[in-house]
Length: 105
Image (cartoon, rainbow, N blue to C red; front, side, top):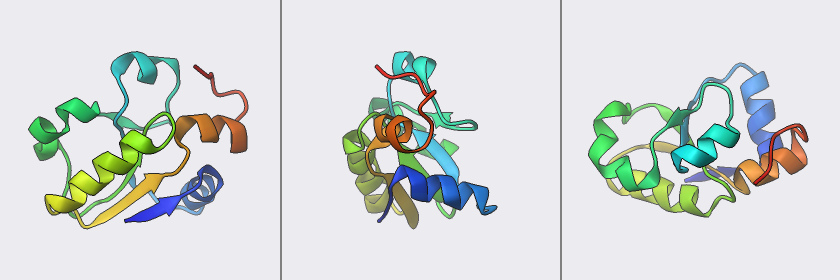
């Protein structure tokens, strides 16, 4: 598993890369702030919704602080997903390091 800090992910996206942005937070959190194009699959629903994800796609896993996304990313690796990136620091760090206009909660 790779890890990106928010500034690294921002540069990666601006560099033309188009990974799947998988947000594993709860719907109420996703409603407050999200990265454009991020797909919401709450962590608790992930096992039942694996079929919605391409096992060969590059996937960046996102949560509030980077803990749930880390565990979700490890889970994805154990079930055969090959290119997983955890957003270290999550959306809170995104607001601190990349986009201060991002709502905080």
